Structure formats: structure tokens, C-alpha cells
Image 1 (cartoon, rainbow, N blue to C red):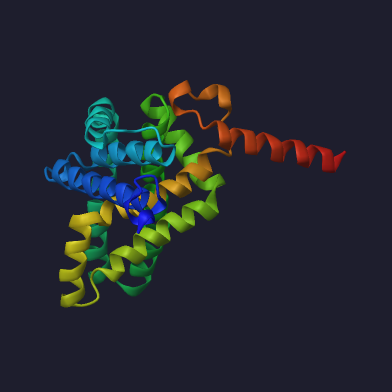
Image 2: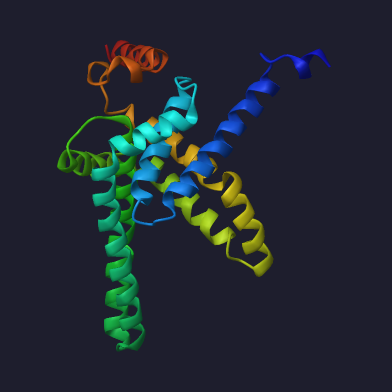
Length: 236
């Protein structure tokens, strides 16, 4: 019983973390309602999740709106491009359904190859805006590079998003249950899993000197430097 009422216990820390995810999810849903603001909402959510991972945030609401405003312009540009591309793909799918079989196959293959790349670049761009300070072109180009070079993490992110979407539309009952979960903690929960993959991908390409002091994860870099020294010693 003492364990249950100890605010320093793992149980209380879990409830505190889950509560922050619920608050974060609600903020994401509310700020995404205009649709055009979804990019800024994703970036703000990623930024808060990164800080929660590093235990650097005390007020989820304040941090969320600060990041939302700071990254609104670049996030919105990237989001509108992604949204336009998705609409373009949907229109081409409709055209392909009426086209001849050989043309239909080419259209499907082209869209099937391009869509994951565009989605990957956009997702990593949002995460990079949340984590680093770069201009728009540098953010997108680095996001594409890191996404490709960190393919295992990228595949996990895409699988998480695809599986969660498919699981939500299996049956009418599943759609009702999924709607409740998405509104309560779904977006922030999925975002938490994806941010773990982004975090691991970023640390492969980020030097300690490239991060400001407030985003520095000393333990992470100490571990990476120790692994690098061990590799060099092994080769020697």
C-alpha cells in the first residue's frame, strides 16, 4: 500500500506520464481541427514528446503552444505539400481505375513508390523542426537523408502508422472503439512510439556540439562515445 501512495514510485510516475499524454493528445486534436494546422500540431507534439523523453518539461500545455507557434510557418508549408500530394495521388487512383490494365499498373507502381518517400520525408521533417534549428530547405533535405539512411527505423514508423490506421477501420464497432482511443490518447501514444524511432535515428547523425544545452542528452552521448571508442579499440 505504501508503494501505491508514494508519489516517487514507478506507478505514480506512470500515471503522471499517461496523464501528460492525454493532455497532449487533447491539445493535438483541438489545434488540428482547422486541418491546415495539422503540420504545426505534429511538430509541437513531437517537440513535447522529445522533452518528455528527456524529462525536460514541467508544463505540457505551455511547451506545446510555444513549439506550435515557433514552428507554425515551416510546418504548415510541409504539411500543405504533403496534403496536396496525397490528394493528387487519390485523384490518380480514380483515373487508374478507369484506365487500361497496363497503364493502371504503371500508375499504381509510381504512386506506390513515391507516396512512402514523401510521407517519410514529411514525418522526419516535422521531427527535425521539433528537435533542431534549420531553414526549410535544410530541414527537408536532411530529413530525406536521415530517413533513407535509417531505413529500419523508418520502416518501423511507417508500419506503426499503417497498422494503427488499418486496425481502426476493420469493422463499424472497431471504428467506434478506435475513435474513442484516438480522441483520448491515440495520437500522442502513436507519436510517442514514432518519436522513439526518430530519436534513435537522429543520434546516429548528430554531434554533441550541434545541439543547444537545453536539448542535450548527456547520457545518450556518453553511451555513443563509449561505443565508438570500443569499436576503434576492437579495430586496433
